[in-house]
Structures are given as C-alpha cells and as structure tokens.
Image (cartoon, rainbow, N blue to C red):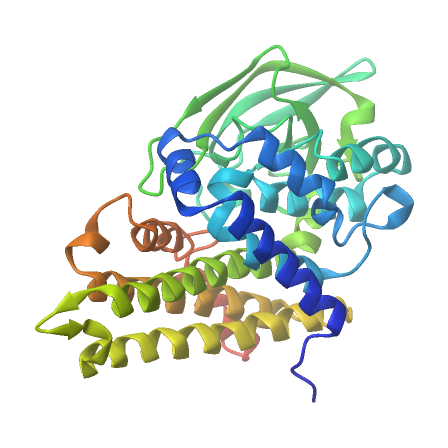
Length: 384
C-alpha cells in the first residue's frame, strides 16, 4: 500500500502552489473576493500552464492524467480561486462531463477551447423547492421543435453562471409519470448570452458567483444535446464521484491555507511578553487543525485513487466529501478562534476559507443525505 505521490504528481502540486504564491498574493485574492470577479489575465496564465487540461485526453488538447492529478490541482489552487476563476466547475462539468458523455464533435470543438481557457462552464441543475430531490422537483422542460429544442423553466444556485460561457442544463424531455423518474431528463449545452437566458445573482455568505437562471423559450440545436436524449441523469450520475471528490479537494485546499496562515500568525502575534505560539491552547488548536485536515486528505486521496482505477467508489467518494466538509470547516473555525478578533474580520483569509467550507456541508448534497447514502451502502433500508 503506497501513500506517496509520484515525482510527477509532487511536481504538479508544487508548481500550482508556486503559481498561487507568485500570481495570487493574499491582497489580490482578497480584492477579487470583495469585488466578486476573478482576474482574466490570471485565468489565462493558469490555462497556459496546462492545468485546466489535467485529466483531459491529449487528443483534445489536454495534459492527460487522471482524477488523482486533477484533485491535486484543485486542492493546490483553491485558496486562490477568487483570483483564478471557476476552475473546478470548468474542469468537472465541462471537461469531465464532455469527455465522458459528449459527442466526438463536441469533444473536438469544445475541449481544446476549455483547455486554452477560452471557454468556462457551469452546471445548471438545482431547481427552486428541489434541493437534493433533483428528479422530483425538476420542472424545467425541453420540447422538440423541428431540428431544435426549446427550453423553458428556471434553476437556482447555479454557481459560476456569471463567469461561464456555457451552461449545462438538465431539462425534462419526457413527463415524469412516463417510465422511471430518472429517465426522461436530457442535458443541453446553452450559451449564457443566448436569447431567453436571464442570470440574477444570489447574495450568499461566501460571496461566490451563484445565481438564479431563467430559461424563457431558449432555442438550441440538436447538436447541443450532451449524450443521449432522455438519459441525461445517468450521464450526471457518472460524474457524481468526480464532483464529490473535487469539492472535497476544494475544502482541503482552503483548510490547509487556513492552517498555514494560523501558524504564521501565531508566530508573529505578541501577547504577555512573547509570541502566542508558545501557549499550549494555541498549540493544541493548531495540532487539531492538522489532524482534521490529514484525516480528510487520506479519505479524499483514497477515493480519487479508486476512481482513477475504475473501481466502484460511490460510498467512498460520498464519505470523502462529507468528512472533508466537516473536518475542514472545523479546522477553519479553530483557526479563527486562534486569531481572535482579526480572524472575525471578512478581510482575513481564514474567515474567507471558513465561509467557503461551510457551503460544502450543504452542497453538492447535504452531509445528512451523504450519511443516508452511506448507511444504505452498508445494507440498511433506504430512508427517503
């Protein structure tokens, strides 16, 4: 059993971290977070390094590699995400989904554009009143009209919609009463500037780009169908492990950045005649942060490895997401406590990481629902 990264993986992770230190210093990230806008030049530099293409076949312009490699990239880059841009939605909902479900023409046309940083993607799935009950709540429809499809409906909590060029929209193409509930859903590629698309921001605790998106008679061609008609939800299921492992990697990156910031702060902050890092309570908090992060990291890397080997890992990916969200949020909370009043200010990096990790106790599925899935995988009856 080998827990070590390969030399190439260590170099990849170190390179992304060096980029973050060089191109995304704390003041730049804080300014981008406050403005709610990333830096386009930083996004294109990140793309030029080839990191958006990690996990994408070189035949489509990618850098190759697998989900372990992309997990390392997301983890290392997440503390600077406000400055870089929506790399995880683009890599997961654009790169992985198109690579696994897209047509050959879509792959040849869109994946090189994604790798080059010229196209960003967002998933438009959740509907008002739905939450985790995606299928039961889906009211957005797509109806055929000649060679086109016409989409009507609305979505909520569509992250990265304002900065994306394309939305991947799940819509019902068959009434819910006909056949299995999971059937009759189709995925469509919709341009964010298409006629009939409206994007309205939602103000959230983390300050990130999340939105209500409306679709009013939005017309798309049949070449914009991703995968098979009526089987879009099954294509999404194929992506779920990637999404859960990726969101866990985001949490790891934020929590590790919080730990690094707290250690530096505790060595500089003076109180009662010396640096506060000599106090046992501070040391215990820092040690607990480290333990929580390392526990989560082992689960995340194991789930990513299982996925890279094409082994069944639904429960492991779900568990990695749930543990990473809980542990990393707690670690950031401990860090805020060590930093005291400074940690409570919104300009403090640890405070920003705390707000970011809080989201993933709710998303992409709530941790309570994650526990339901895990219990079911252990042979217990379905509870919902």
